[in-house]
Amino acid sequence: MRECNEAYSIMLAANETGRPLPDEGELLWPFRAMMHSVATRLNEIDWKNFLNITDDFVVVSLDSIGNWLAEDLKESMSAGKYLMLQKRNLLFDSE
Image (tube, rainbow, N blue to C red):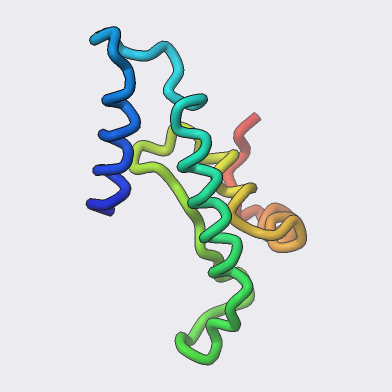
């Protein structure tokens, strides 16, 4: 978590205006996409070899505030896993 916060601070330092950005999403997208990729790869591991898990176990990449929670959830796992969780009502309704 410390490393992610440090990367976030470095990216925001690129804002030379001194004013808050109206939307940090564009600036943070490359970092978030990389984290989604890591989560997706971790979800390909058969965790049953290491942990006592259920079939709804997932690794998710989220920012500490949850600004993009729905998008981060969807991008962190396979479409099949996402649909399974959705059918079981294990995801919140973001609409």
